Image (cartoon, rainbow, N blue to C red; front, top):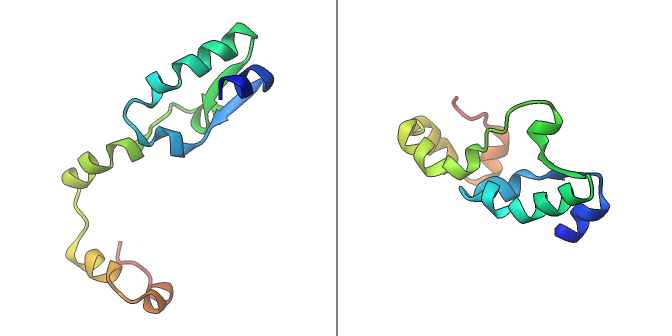
Length: 90
């Protein structure tokens, strides 16, 4: 990624890399490489001029704070063909 960051003026980081709590520190060498040549490494949120809010790395914590309803869990266990035809209870 450091090589890419040196070649691409603005490197947008996909949400997959933000799944780990240490994502910001992990990308530090990439950001530094980009900055040395006047480039930048940003998230898609930052591209949209918003503050990054990487919920994926907080999935377990968020699940404990707001567990899905029994109805939703029942819906999630439906056979695949029924899942496609049945809207989830939100």
